[in-house]
Length: 403
Image (cartoon, rainbow, N blue to C red; front, side, top):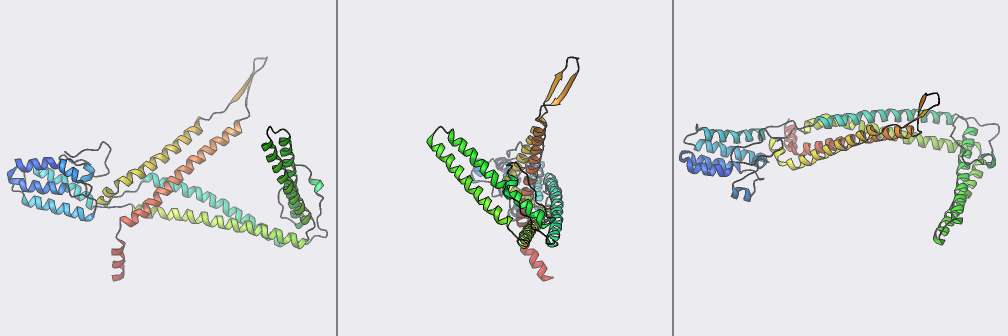
């Protein structure tokens, strides 16, 4: 008997109730159909997956009975036809049953089968939805920077150029934000930013000097002193940039701002184009994937090991995503309960609520990312290999030329 795999088969029946050894024995026992049984034995070992050792020991794995090419499928069918013709008693139940089992294998191998996976399609649709949201965000950025470009182009020269002493920004934690409403506001924001970097570098240098004073080894002390010197050099560089910008004319500031917003606009447009491209690419890929994943049965048999690997990748991705979701769900919130002298109690967050929410969201995003990446990879790989393996494009091209 052919060995039966415990796992569910992708083939029609996945089980053959006899082995080559059984057929050889039957050829001896059933003299009228002896030649026919020999031909059934030959048909059963047509596939290239049947090894010489399998043939010698008369035991074949059920998967290996299935032909893996169109030629092997045809050879197996021819042998079955010969066996039926050679049978002196073709209506014998044992012979007829075994012949039909092998014919079922041939019929399954000759037909095309829908082999696409709904889980992959759903994962790609989720990816398309996420990309659509990202595309909308990038389009919004494009409109924002287009408005900035228009604003900067229409700047009017102020009566007096802004000049600000760097001492005005002597606070290390001083915040800054760029303002494109006018040349003076933009220049002031740039000065503020440069001053921030200047004082930040000085603060870093002081920290390294303090570490050098308390260093336990001469090597660490020298390293801290070197870092402090580098920070001082950076501070001096930002001071020079500040002084140069402080003296800049309206024309210089206008050119600087215009170059900046045009660069931001170019990046936003490029990002929006790429996101739109991949969004449309995977949207179009879905029907192509369904079309590509319609192989002949013999092709499924040929690449069954690869199919198991891809199935393992899919299961692994789903397992990882599920673990991340479970982890996110297991993160609870910690409340501090205070009981007062009057018997009342109050409950308040211990201060880690924000961090816990951020961690939950991060894990859920990671799970979604895993699903999207695995699904897109499987669809892209399956589509490319399916189009190559499952269709004879030379024959298609020849048919088109004839028309």
